[in-house]
Length: 163
Image (cartoon, rainbow, N blue to C red; front, side, top):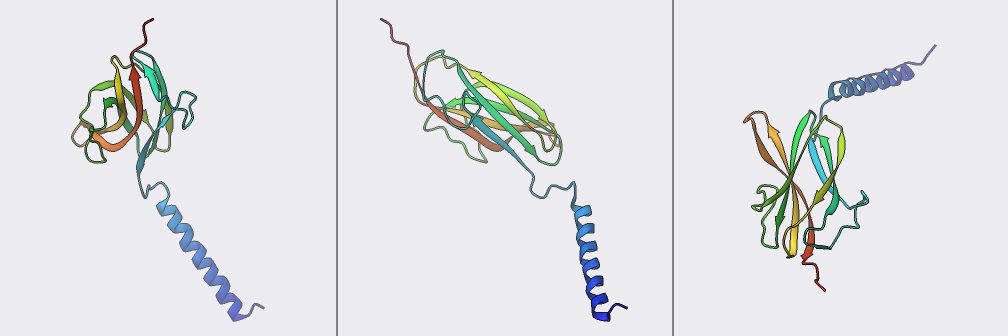
């Protein structure tokens, strides 16, 4: 026969495992810290190897990485903007800069996508700040709102030399 202390230990283990299992069952499917992510990849679809100097009207090939961990389907709009050193941007304020292009994607929770980007800048620009801002559709207001996430790339755009 099993000793009373052994029975008590086994019962305690069963209770702890049961409570833990029930807690996992209740918490499953719930996103504790929802987030979205945006990343900028170079022309070889890797972090790094970004262009530093381009010519006016030269195609700049990059990739945007978008990741959804918000707990539900998300509609993202990414604005490519051209700023400079004085262009203000942070998690609360989007950049007040000209829009070069717009990229849209709908992503289920837990999914990500890599989007090819091809841009051209029409005039010479020293210390250009190429900014990619993440906006999301807000169903409550039925409008797009700035999501406070962005990535940037500093480049110089030069005029081609004429011989």
